[in-house]
Length: 299
Image (cartoon, rainbow, N blue to C red):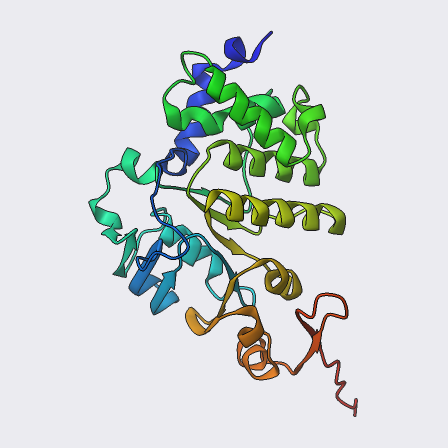
């Protein structure tokens, strides 16, 4: 059965119901040299009855560049990403997209501006890789009526970019964790968005595929002028593949700047509460960090 026939209303609403706010795309005419940030937050706060997750933070995300959100577990990275996408209710503050308040966007209009890939995603039963990636084309309003030539080209390009062309007909549920993660990334690429928000995109991937995915996303950022904000736990990968690093702790931004400025013992100790060493990569000269592994004497 071909892909047009297999896209059912049931699957459509099962997926779109959970991800509709991030399923549309809009051309955003901002370059890396634009003075207008792609995303901005002012006084951004998220709080629950017994916990403050984000505490009045300010942030600007430069257009056409890659920004990494880094920090210890529970510091608010994923919550910040969801807040920038308009998926997280705020306790206070504002978010602007290309200089326009997030609250001023209609749902479809906002969703055509950016897309977010969450860290964990549920997949409707019986979906193939090609069908999953094709959901990224829902933004163009043609999916229910069948895929257009442009849709098919975008799906094929996304599958090729992420190394899944040979898996298009496989059931997503039958994939390994790493293959499944790459399928979700391919769906995001098929949307051809100007702004991509990615929560730990290298989850489940081995080191080879981690580097492949990060390299491919960086290439697409450069070629298409994309703005990418990703949450990464691996600091050395964040330094190697990002233009800017935001260091967070306890719901606040402690430091923001270039990898060279952020990968320092002082900034990393502030952020992670432990001594770190800075080295230079022997081939690229890029900053590399290591924990000092100073062991306290056991009494």
